[in-house]
Amino acid sequence: MTGRRVIVTGGLSGIGHAIALDLVQKGHRVVVGARDLTSPARRAALEALETAAVAGGGAIRGGVLDLIDPQSVGGFCARAADWLGDADVLVNAAGVTAEQPVQGHSDALWQRIIETNLTGAFRMTRACLPAMMAQGWGRIVNIGSTAASVGWKDNPAYCASKAGLLGLTRCVALEGAAHGVTCVMVSPTWVETPMMQSDLAEVVAREGRGRSVAEARAEIAAQNPQGRILQPDEIAAVVGFLLCDGARGITMEEIKVTGGAFW
Image 1 (tube, helix red, strand yellow):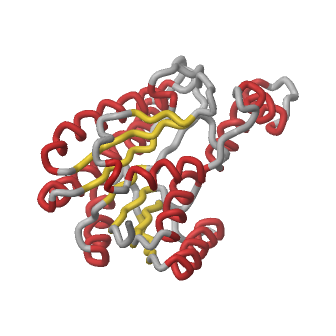
Image 2: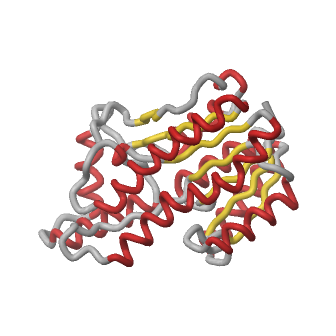
């Protein structure tokens, strides 16, 4: 199946970038949203997508998207529609986290994480769902986390946001079920991404016991039954399958990709 019209939030980093890369290589037309399109890392990520699109027969556009700002969401969706038309697929992959215990946790940090991970996905879904329902076909994939069902010390906002995202997934799945629209949450354990590296750096700095980020990473890998850390392309492969017609019966589900790990 090729030629679907796809929006991927957080599409220039980590899991979102891997998903966008997989889809343009398969011939889909993709718009990626990111808060920053100008940094060297983001420019390089977009160029990699453009190269892959040429090779795979897909197409790619990038747009500025700040999920915390409703006007930014509206403007991004309007620009995406000008180029794509109505989106067939929405992948809510944008996400942020921060290591902070409940004690001393600021309202501002809580709001930033909840607004990005949960409210942002809601705003994007609200914008895309009506057209999917009208055309009788659509796929909404939310990138969650095992944090949705398992607590993690010093991550209250992140865990709460992913638990809320699972609830949103189930409600949207019910709303779209009679109209050919599915909604699924894909929940990985630790995945090798810039966000993981940043998170580990925060943990190591707070501990103050001389453990390096590399040592922290090795400990996490050793805790996984497969003895490794998952890679972004593994999550992208699951998302790619969910887009196919054969996956039309998979909705309202949380699909965990963990390598056997509990968290």
